[in-house]
Length: 166
Image (cartoon, rainbow, N blue to C red; front, top):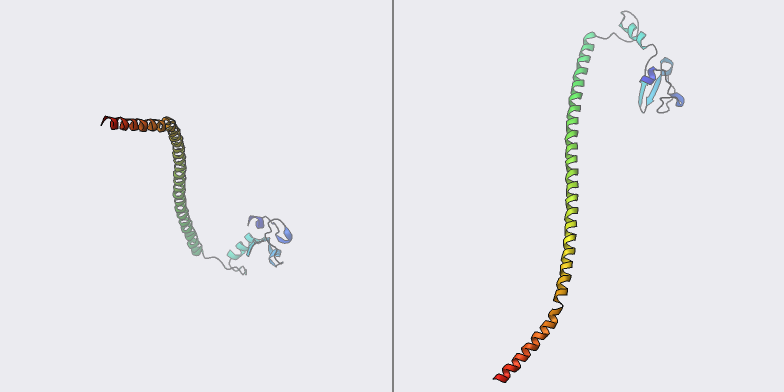
C-alpha cells in the first residue's frame, strides 16, 4: 500500500505492477495496484474525505463513524493482537521443541554411525589378527603329517616286536 500512497502507477508495467488489469475509474481518484485478485487503492484526497464525512451536514456519501464502534473495534484489535502474540509464542515453543528433537536425533544418528565405524574397524583388525594366527598355526602344524607317519611307523614296529615276543 506504500507504493499506492506514494503515487506509483501499476498500469502498463510500471513499478509495483503485479498483473495487467483493465483500466478502471479508480485511477482518476488515486493510485491503484493489483496483487492477483486483490486491488490496493488509496484516494488522493483521503484525509479530506474523512474530515468531510465527520462534519455534520457535509452531504458526503460516507456516513459518520460511531465513536463507540471505533472503541469496540480498537478493543477487538488489541484482543486479536494478544491472541496472535500468544499463538506465535506457542508456535515458537513448538518449533523450538521440534528443533531440539531434530538435533537430538541427528546427534544420536552421528554417534551411532561413529560407533558402527569403530566396531567395523575393530572387527576388521580382529579378523586380520585371526587370519595371521591361523597362518602361524598352519605353519606350526606342517610337521604333524610327517610326525603322524612316524608314529604309525613306530606303532607298526611295536606291533611286529610284540608279535615276535609272543
